[in-house]
Amino acid sequence: MFLHVKEAKYLHDYVIWIKFNDGIEGEVNLETELTGEIFGKLKNKELFRSFKIDPTLETIVWENGADLAPEFLHENIRIST
Image (cartoon, rainbow, N blue to C red; front, side, top):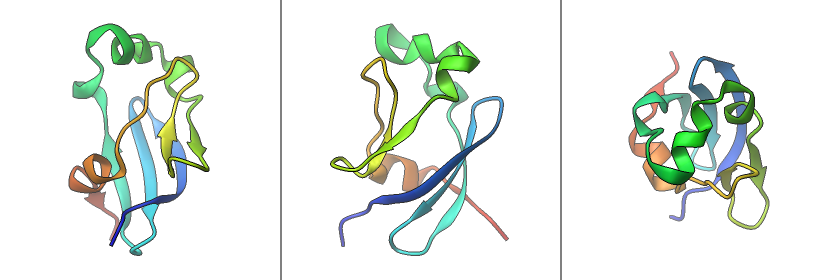
């Protein structure tokens, strides 16, 4: 099964709630991933919280060109209870 992000919303700091097409949903804290030329810019919380779900890639993306694979997000999710 290919994973796709179906819903996502900003929660706080660098934490995003995500729901996948396999029904799994939960929080992903991306603070430790914000390094390098592209992702480092997302330390600006205004830019970080401006993500969208790209309908073609079916994952979260930012205006500066950053995106994260749904598989990576799925592996790092803290499941909601």
